[in-house]
Length: 432
Image (cartoon, rainbow, N blue to C red):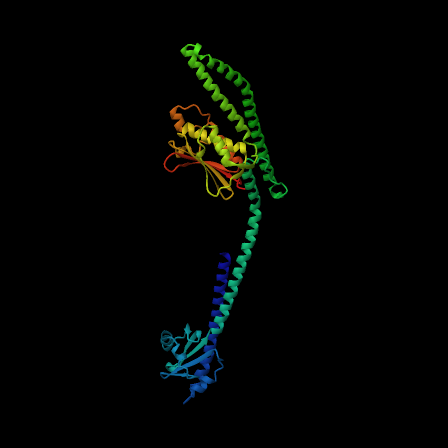
């Protein structure tokens, strides 16, 4: 825009200056020639044509004389007299000089009218064709300069922007890697000395975050590990009480059954905590026959194998972490059994380098307000809370989200056509 404005302003200034200068020159020449013509026609029986031919006007100027109601010119071309505007003639015949730019058949021109004595008027048509060509050339040059300046400015701006934004791109990539679970991502302090302070602060933040996550992981793993031994003792004691429930009174038998159920739930919670503590580690990918693995997971939960559907065009083997994939599918199936009325389909498909796992259920579905939170830790849906269902630990779907993130993917909840919920897990880079 700046180049265009400068070019336009320069063009207008040059054009106005040249035209004004040419007009002043034409006026001076017209007055000079008018003086010569006035002197030449002052005698008796003047030769008007000879007087007009004596003028040194060149080919660009055409002198015309209006005398006693007749036109006199050096040539027989009537286009010259026709080009003189009637308003200008009226002004000149009224005794006042006038100047006007016109467009004629031969190109632009300027007409100068000078009144003489006795109602005689002298006109000079000065062609501006040569000047118009010069102005056009100047306009083309300025346009070319503006385009070149714009291109050069754009190139410099692109280079400067790339140089300025490159560190931000590196920060973005590092942050994305860290969000994906790669806590080893760091910024190179030597890449841009001007941003050394930002690099040190960012790397220090990542070190602190990595250390805190590692401490939290170890704490959860240590707590879960320490709870296993007393849990095993409690489970063994509860098993003895359960076997001898017939010898107990009704209240004691109910209490023994409740203790046994809660100990089992506590064991599931401890195992989930251990898995959650390990889920921050990178995925150990290997080629896995996912359809067969999915059927095995269904069989282990006494579900029909024909739930598993391999979408057409989907590769048989995916590059995934076998243990994580098994647990993702198992948790989704358990969630469908406990809260969704049971699974109705398990779909395995691929889109480009992204593979997906979908589990459909025939339950009431998940309200849109809960879909962003159910993958959090210790979060249980409203439907389960309303039913008073205490079988879940609130960690199953959190583990699904963690395992999906370890595969550079994510988990979402959709509506199943016909009713129910569809849990979809996307895994990046798993297609062979």
